[in-house]
Image (cartoon, rainbow, N blue to C red; front, side, top):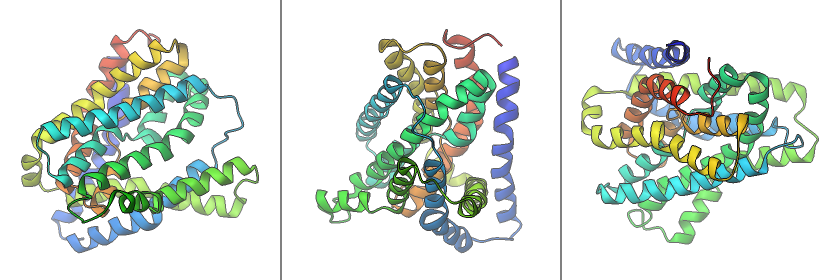
Amino acid sequence: MTHFISMFLLVCPIFLTMAVGYTIFRVGLVDDAFVSQLNRLFYLVFLPLLLFDKIGHADFSVDFNIDLITGMTILFFLSLALTMTIGTFMGASPSKHGAFVQASIRGNMAYIGLAVVASVYGNEGLAAAGVLLGFLVPLLNGLCIFALLWPRRKVGNLSAMQCLRQIFSNPLIVAAAAGMVVSLSGFGIPRIIGETLHILSGMTLPLALVAIGAAFKPAEFRGAISFAMTATTFKLLVLPGLAYLILNAMHITGVNIGVGVILAACPTSSASYVLADQLGGDIPLAKAVVMLATMLSVFSYTLLLSCLPVFPTP
């Protein structure tokens, strides 16, 4: 019960933020054109700034667990292959295929993941999670962009090389690479720029949640329910289960395996909706998984924290 209450208090404000967006749209304060323009701003400006801020401030010079980083990298490449295969067997169209794969592997690590880590492990867990996120954020963005573009390469008359060129020139990949360079250079980000980035990046994901709520249409949700349920099940249960098996097989124990499982178990990130909207993914499916995974993560986190032997008793 303690885990359930903690998770409910963590997830409920996120879902209510989406409900605010839904209400704003229903009373006519914004329209579809505004939401579309907002998503374009997220994609071209705010999300790249968020990535640059997070990665640029990451301290890669501190001690980190190379086995944990390796294990999580294996996890996400394996999950990419599995979900692309599942999407193919389910007969997904190119746009639905990409949105399905992305929603199945991309989690809300910055907001929910770090909060759960702090609740379970305190500062020790946050230190390990912070370094791990510095590696996972650019990796996951690259994998998700690939997942959205690759199934559409034939539809868009793109060669494999043109598709890869689009991936590596994507503003999110460019921002992640720039952040990595700044962090590894040791020069850091000047304070006045850093504070500006903090303000801009701090409003990105909350506004993305509002945009999801504003763009949510119940009729669209019903049309995407089978893929949404499959993606949500994979994200909340299968992915953390695979994380546990891989990390345990690599003899990773204690805080490190717990941090890995918690970050893998995060509900789908609101950024996945923005990316799907801008790269030709199935938008109703992307919205449906974000909302469904956020709601159900209360129960999935409670189950994982209560049943897996890697977590301390509350």
